[in-house]
Length: 283
Ligand code: CP
Figure (tube, helix red, strand yellow):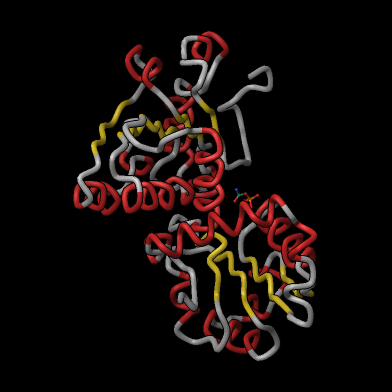
């Protein structure tokens, strides 16, 4: 039994299949689960902006009968603005709630908070670290559309250095679905390439992977899952020149109708959102 979820590779096979089965059951019969969290209170503690993660957690909590207390910009609107540490903030919150959903602005925040709190902590994205619940949703989506997640080609595209969703998805696929091929398409700039610790993990699980800078014919034709991500502009605040270089190179990876038209009809295209120009509206 997991108490906290701060990185996706914590989950073993039984826990993962249990979560997928539970999600399928909730989707099939949402009414059956109403009120399961009645009387519970959950803190949504967000240090970075969010649209869908926060809304999703709050909507889910409410659907299950829980109430929420929240801070949507904790750096500005919580006592973090006065210098309070993450440890103190989360320890105080844990005295008031039954669980904490934490989006933090640095990698490792949720794992750090888990050391102090007295209630479960769920990582809702920690800087350039991980986004494990997004990966669960992404896997759930893939399994809905791909018959056998084996021998498939999964193409991760964009800012693979800063994008926490691709980090969690790569770890998740490598641990539980290692018999697929990963293609990692990103600009040829160190900061936006898949980090070495993830490549090491892929190797340790025997996952076949290769990197690329552009869409070539082979990748277009063999892709089963295309997972697009945006350049994380907020990670380049003090580096406008580097940002411009990355954006220019990344724009060559954007999908266009002619490219998508050459993919297999069964290929699925995903994006964790928010979307910039990676997938134009006509696609
Ligand atoms: N996918 C995702 O994390 O989106 P938000 O940043 O809007 O929560």
